[in-house]
Length: 337
Image 1 (cartoon, rainbow, N blue to C red):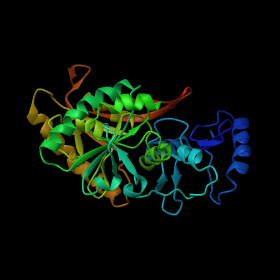
Image 2: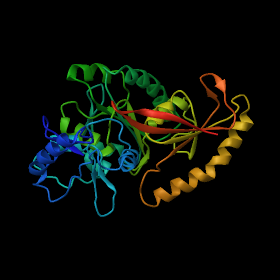
Image 3: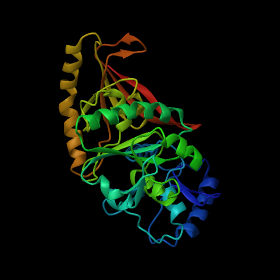
Image 4: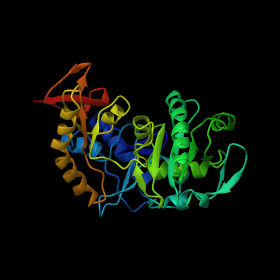
């Protein structure tokens, strides 16, 4: 982690020379001395393997990035440290641990007809926390699909609500976008609550749909993928599967960390199912191991039928993040026979 001299915020950027490393160490010491905790700076003299492990472990997808960790357990306290520093520059809420969804969201919510209701109305329902903005084309595309999914789930008698957390750049833009939505929203003027929800779920990009159970616990952070893959909402509330079928809509997950992809004959459904059964015990064992430690599994598992339109039998593809002289780039593709 290093401190950006301009914003005085900590990031996961790496100093590119010994002199730059020393300069960052000089800046960090006075800025972080108010907290009786440590910020470790990774220099180019540190093990490249250890740096890669940290990026993979904490799923860092962009920089600057600041993640707070409980040193005694190694568990993540907060993924969006930059927002924490912005919202609480004096450290009054330190150590910034996670709070229950019901506490973070507490307050009035809006419907697009101007009606207000209290956040307690969400209790007992599955909730989709939707981070989106009108200026974002993928967000607008997802919203159109999500409106239909919302309607189908409600018509099926499921207790489900969506909470829109806007990233729009103006209230007028928010109102225009929200007018298309049949669910509830955090008022645009309540920037503090919107920011707290971003911090709670470590949002690094939009659109993002976090699906919660009736107790406010996360079922899946991949609601966007689930909605696009399950347009009939037959698998709602989309509990995660150990092994996924790789599709155009979920291929974005290849950029989020190490993945294992087993390719099979896409024209034979039996081959695909057999491939899932082959790697599912391995996936379940790894997921269970990390779940027992209250951590995310370090590897995602996929079965796929084609590569660039061509079938590939019995191939295993490992997708791993990589660092070049230009910095961190999307995963490299590594083939294993």
